[in-house]
Amino acid sequence: MALESLKAEVGMILEMFSNPPYDRFELYMQLKEKLNEMRVFGMTPPDDLLEFEKALDQEFATKQPKARRPLK
Image (cartoon, rainbow, N blue to C red; front, side, top):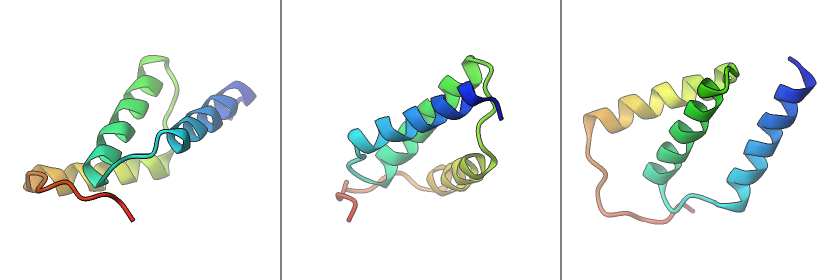
């Protein structure tokens, strides 16, 4: 992995920590947004995040988010 890509990924992770999600659905939406940004800029998202995205896609495709509860 190129140093620039690694720096960008670390920066994105730190940004996520500075703006924590309110609940699981918001986490899902933030993850999709960040992965789409990476794709637009020609970066390859890490495999573990792609697997997490796929799992969340399946989770939220089968149900609508209920009352929003904060993450613990």
